[in-house]
Length: 117
Figure 1: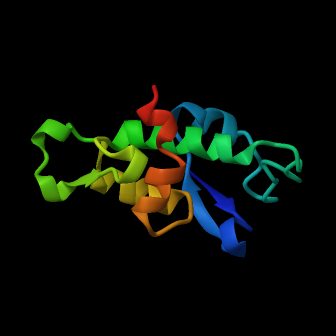
Figure 2 (figure 1 turned 45 degrees about the vertical axis):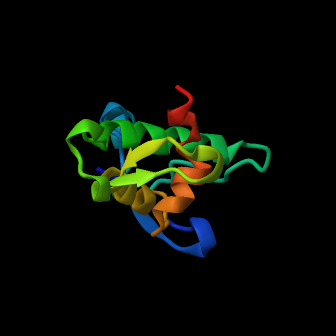
């Protein structure tokens, strides 16, 4: 199941896969009239935190065991993230779900929540 994001980051549209635990809830929206999940996003909503939570949940679902991955299959944190490693394949999928095509963006701006949990 996917939700169509009509105007996302940079005005781009994309389809975002729904996490399994939310499919029943999202499935209640009318598919024929394309009812909006959100008519308008409030300006004071902390969208970044929700995006970080979403990124972490998807990453957690997709992550492979780091012990089984080669060095090239891992993303190694830089700067203040030094010592933190992520699964590159999972990062690519999460990056695409958020409307990016660069894994360093999600490593530096979204997966911090995952690293701290």
